[in-house]
Amino acid sequence: MDAWFAPGGWLGWFGAENYDAARFVLQRGIAAIYLVAFVAALRQFPALLGERGLLPVPRLLARVPLKGVPTLFRFGYTDRRLRVMCWVGIALAATVIVGLPQAGPPWLPMIAFLAMYGLYLSLATVGQVFYGFGWESLLLEAGFLAAFLGSDQVPTPIIVIFAFRWLAFRVEFGAGLIKIRGDSVWRDLTALYYHHETQPMPGPLSWYFHHLPKPLHKVEVAANHVVQLVVPFLLFAPQPVATWAAAAVIATQAWLLISGNFAWLNWLTMLIAFAAVDDGVLSALIPTLAPSDATRPTPAAFAVVVTIVGLLTLALSYWPARNLISRHQRMNASFNRWHLVGAYGAFGSITRRRHEIVVEGTTAADPGSAEWCEYVFAGKPGPVDRRPRQFAPYHLRLDWGMWFLGLGSTSQYAWFDPFLDRLLAADPATLRLLKDDPFDGERPAWVRARVFAYRYSTPVERRRTGAWWVRREITELARPRRLAP
Image (cartoon, rainbow, N blue to C red; front, top):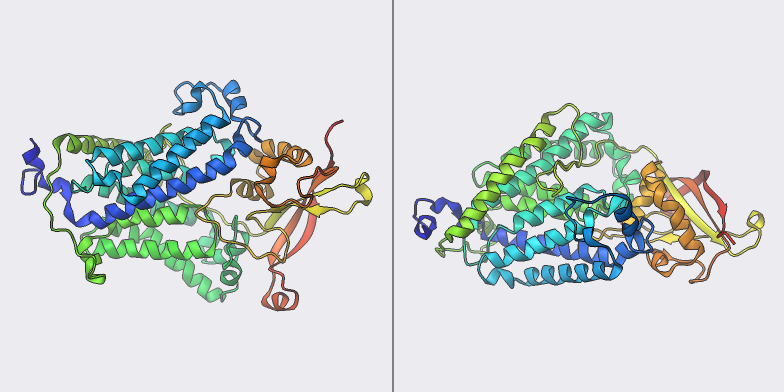
């Protein structure tokens, strides 16, 4: 049977020799994102969701039956177990990045990626609102598919390459449709009048992007519609058209990457789109990257497994395909507990004004006459003279939660009161999530939270004051509070 899958055999089409570069980029790139995700979990998960976290996983396990839920924590959670899982995930990702599993038989990278997928799935399924992002499912699905790309000993399976293109199609086309259907500013091309100023976590260049001429903003939106609504179909076209379609997706994602902080969403989308890049086209651009002329047969057992995965992907595609054509399209939806073959999309609506929660504390006994000091978060806007920083692909989950809180999201209230109590207790794990603790680890007497309206400073204001933001107080979110005696 192995002869069937050899080059020139009946099923020689199974392996695509001209996608070795795509496999190289997909495997190592996706593994790098997993490494970042596990590092972020190692640093943040205990404080947010651990035994003494803001939304403790043990409390979730006691309250919600997890029968059938795919997580290793079904049998109990401890911070130590979480850290072991993260370190295992980091080690596995590192081996793939340097290419160790790829040097062996095809089942070695399969084991590595399925292990990373299973470990991260265990975190995401108990992560509650702190893991309620579409790119969690995107990373899980990409990691699952990467498990079946094989090793350097076998040709790249064309079935998996097309599964990745289908994933890229759903990410891009789903995002394009949700924009057109969701908000008039996408239809009248004015979305970027607001987006760079109101996005969850601006980057160091976002101020400059916001102040680009408005006609250019309209051109950007129109170009985005073309790339998200037309170009995705070309990912399935013959070469070199598919490669140029992938280049268009990668270019627009790179534009988004430098204009904001969206965790690993843009990075991962660029990697997934690379599945459409052909070795021949790439080598024509970069002559030193000559396509491989090696003839490598595909083991029958591996081919059978990949075919089953392809059929599974096809069967599960019914739900996201139906979602795409639905008038009530869902954004970032999973249709099964394994987070496979889901629906994706981002910014179906654009926030017109930015509201930020400013958390402050004081050591004074009387809060009425106190001098209040601001807690500075790592990524979200705070002091007006602080320039936003670049964190992506690293994911600052607390900062994102604060953005949703500023939008009035009631799902965030469950952790905010415990967060204020942790500040009052000067909890070291919680304080490590922040950039600056104004009390240097000492307990404040009181804390409070106020809501401010933020806008970017104008170029004139920026030159005069040095401030990146202008803010004014709107209301009080949490009145001064202290720990109960």
